[in-house]
Image (cartoon, rainbow, N blue to C red; front, side, top):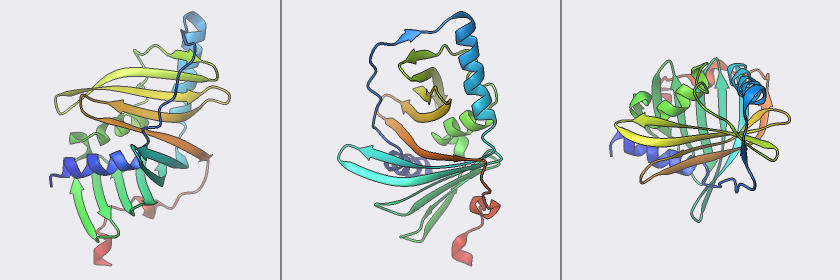
Length: 202
């Protein structure tokens, strides 16, 4: 199976299709619009060391896992129903199926992983977006192109305090989203968690 297909398949299991049901929403404007966008941008830019559990639902399938971010490096792992790990570091990626002892390296820029790289590494990612505000939450939406396919990306923040709660990427035949639970900030994360060295060689 192609690396891209493997990555997409595992990410589908990794991240949630639990969508936020919107009530009455309204476009923010003027100073409030600018303030909210700046607050969300500052929040993302300060995620130097961050971890969180997440819950993923795909039709009738449920998965649980954890995400780690340190110095813009990303580790996504889930433990149920399978133990699978993705690491994105310095624009390189590795997929490791712990249960099957299967490992592959890939270029995340050629996969849906490029969206996560942009979100957490591009300080101006929310530029040219207009936030939509609901009761207690704020949503940013923009188009992204991955391998010539257009996706609609949504990033949902809780407002008070400002913190990311949901990421959703919707393509023609794909819905990829996950809900972030119990985020922990300003913790010490071992840099070894982001090692791209083949663990099967140990």
